[in-house]
Amino acid sequence: MSGAAAEGTRGRMPAWVGAYVRLIDGANAAIGRVAMFILFALMGVMLWGAFARAALAPPIWTDEMGQFLMMGYFLLGGAYALQQDSAVRMDLLYSGWADRTRAIVDCVTILTLFVYLGVLLWGGIESTAYAFEYGERRRGLWRPYMAPIKVVMVTGIVLMLLQCTAIFLRDLAKAMRREL
Image (cartoon, rainbow, N blue to C red; front, side):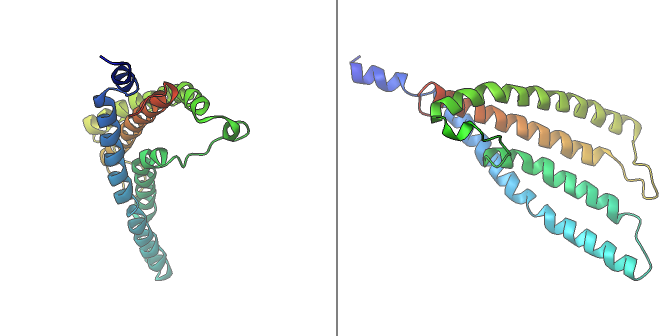
């Protein structure tokens, strides 16, 4: 193998890494764009609640439904926000670093996010199993079942974990000076 050919194979990440990153980025972009429309449902529910209160017939379900929709919006859109790099970052030193240095630091710091999301996922799975097993309902007049929103919660956490893995692999490639 010539020197140029050896350099070409050493300069790329394995094909499965690039395929994984493209798959997760594409899936989370699609899900995130669909999740954006949850805001319209939220506005409709809140508007209905406001009109109903004005007519002196307040519905018992609008406040809790609004909370559920907002939770779904945040959790299903979280992976998309990570993908778009729209998360808040302390930029005191970060902006002055070279791309490779940023990638190395990001590879290390994303590990804390993995731990955090892992603990959330563990608790979310246990809470979802409990909701299904015991038919858990929210306290209050409306008493909606909790299992559907907990499934959305676990799904959102899994999507964020998958996106963090894709971000880690992308940063690892950059830190190793390899192409995806």
